[in-house]
Amino acid sequence: MEDKKINIKDNKKIVLGIAGIIIIVIIIAFLKYLNNPVVKFKQNLDNVDVSKLQEIYSTTQSYDEKKKIEKIFQDKLKYLVESFVNGSKDYDNTIEEINRYSNIKEFENSIKSAKDDIENVKSSKDSFVEGQK
Image (tube, rainbow, N blue to C red; front, top):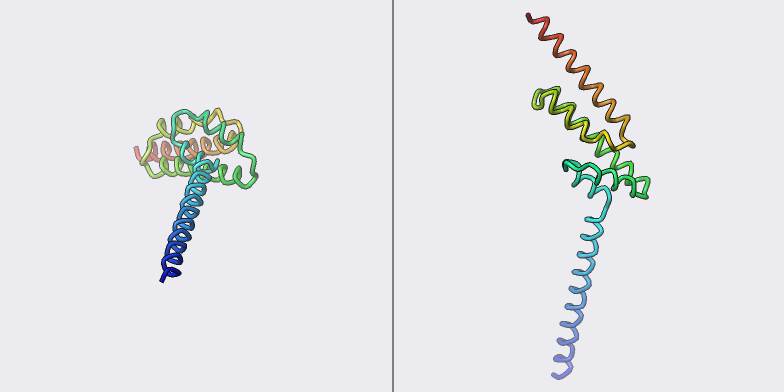
């Protein structure tokens, strides 16, 4: 009878110990996720202050993480261009939003390309309107 009491107490300690370890692992994984440069970049992409984006990108060490950040940024620019094309954003707002990112030197080519795309679409829309008159 006494062996069962000791055994139950030991089992409780083991279960509590495992639960504690699991909680610690979850907390560490969550903190690691929040400190991931890709996640930070994505969270700050719509902020007005783009210097944080520059800082995140320039301090990222991993090649894979830099490529993921570049992909996220290109997707953002693509979204802005598509928003202008489908009419959900006007020309001035779209250009203004893209210009916010112009201080990020590493993305100059992508920014220029997006601006060129918008200019081409604007020119096409303007020509269409002129043709309708």
